[in-house]
Length: 320
Image (cartoon, rainbow, N blue to C red; front, side):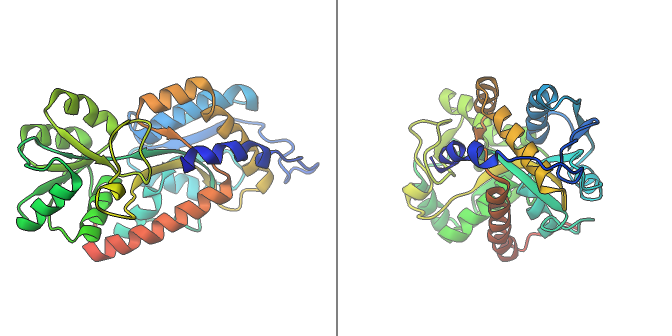
């Protein structure tokens, strides 16, 4: 898998000799580092806590998770923080796509320095058992025969599941009706009860229900089969060539942070996510460890933003 192939080359590339001056990062860190995240319980908070726990000892300073409500507040704090490596942000591609659907008090492509792409999370194309489709091809044929009749749930307007479904609609030419929810819990309740027929959801919310027969999993949205769902085909291999949409998460800091500090943080964070304990916890939560260079994460962050911008404009997605 491409994500795993990155890891082998990451650590040697990250090793560097720190300079003698303060700007070089020689005296970094000498105080508490904060990883800002949204409210406890979500994927950004989960990743922040794994990383904070693994960094505190090796860096010789406390690393704490600072939770703030919503996604805008923690992002704005880091965007406007001094560029000294003491304010980090646990976020992902939604940092960029969120700014495409509503006005933000920061520029996601200019105000942040990506440190490393920590994890990927495929989604699962899932239907209620009442839907007479047992494959992606059958789902496409059904949706085309009944334009607008199938409802699909998303956990938030403009979020990864929403954009992944809109990308699916765009690439297949199907018409399904969007039913937005405020959170995954309510969306899952309604698809299990049959109130909505389709959802693209994270593996952990689907697997148990698929095994019990309450839901039917059709395919994963990653470019290659996922280790999290062995035996399940990809959407791309099931009739939609080139389709790919996954959650992409990582750690950022403030733009213009000295490169020596960025590289130090990168090296330590990649080490943490590749420990046996962290990998076990990540995979158990539906996240595939990656570990990229800052340059690779920056390139992926920008390319995904550009790709999703086309989907957002085509679908007319906007939050006021």
